[in-house]
Length: 168
Image (cartoon, rainbow, N blue to C red; front, top):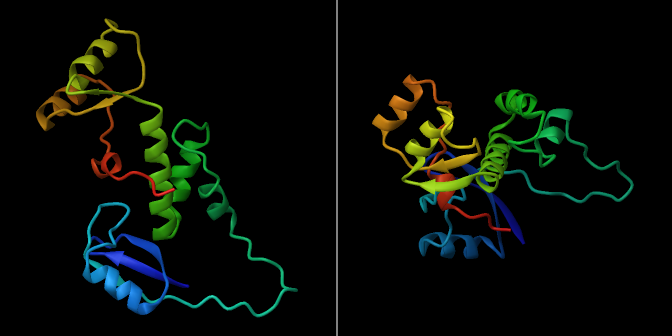
């Protein structure tokens, strides 16, 4: 089994497992490999170090504290989100991508999709006409700008976060 570090044309880095180099090349030529973040099929192989199993008596690798907290699975609703965001800024690109995906997936699971009614419902909640709840949906840039000007707290979510399901 070959584990390869791959990157798409948008510089998103991810890992792929293949039976052989020929298997990787075949799948890439057929467009079967795509970036888990953006869906791009223009994939290149990055330099990567081989995994060498040199002995059983060695102490296992322990990632540093920042990597451990980023890998802990805590997401958007956790009380230490501010700490995670700070650590995310100093993490390596692979850790940043993984943490961003974890946070976005948690946001998606903890919010209600109201579709095109987002701007209207966000405004009604802000003005007290609707009970506040966590929502997400689509809005035009003009509607989003109006909401922000009126003090309605909104945050854009990348559309690729909604399109790409988790592989596991």
